[in-house]
Image (tube, rainbow, N blue to C red; front, side):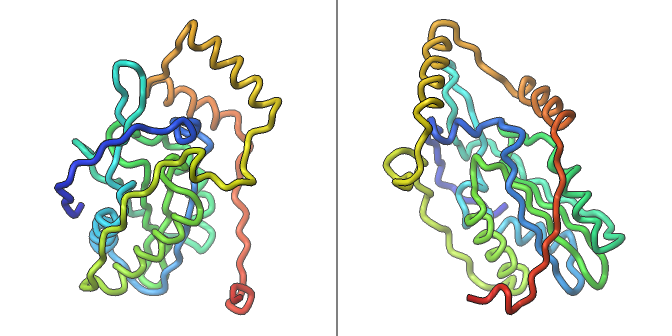
Amino acid sequence: MNENKAHYVRKVTSFERMLSYAPFAVVTMVLRINGDITLEQLTEAVGRVQARHLNLRVRLEKDKENNLWFTTENVKDIPVEEVTREDKDQWLNYHVEASKVPFEFEERPAIRFYLLKSQKTSEIIILCHHLICDGLSLAYLARDLMTCLGNPEQKIEALPDPAPINLDNMPKDVGINPIAKYFINRINQQWSKEPVAFDMEDYRCINEAYWDQAQHRAISIELTEPETQR
């Protein structure tokens, strides 16, 4: 990782916390590359985009009151793995299985990169937890990653710190159903009387139970270049 000496810490908002440790909240981007790419090249590119995007440098930390915080202190490396590519549809099944692997929220950033490699064509699978990204931000990340792979010498500037997600910056048409809001308030009142805190071991158990029960599959839809033009 490219070192960024400025230490960063902020509290996770209630909106962000709704997604913390959720086993189903995995956002995926798959890049297909014509040509040879090495694990070393991908690892170096990941380090460069990590220096650009703050959320790729944070882990979760819990305080004594069970509040969650983003912190850049003592963060382990982002996992980057290589697998031999056997056919053009392999990434579909590999993505499904990789999605079942729990994130190490309290040790490293909630994102992983997989290189399905062959000499002629390779796929890069990016798995990121919704706690630190959405589909659009992951698309921008994929663009930056391709820029770093295509031009390793190009200077990549760090982006401003992302704004916390709260009521102030939520779209006006996004809201909570009144019935759902009523039950959420009831549950919160009950929780305040008898607090229950989940730890990483609970998350791993919930993640395993979820994927044992979930009916999950990926569908590949390929668009032609004209179909993707505005």
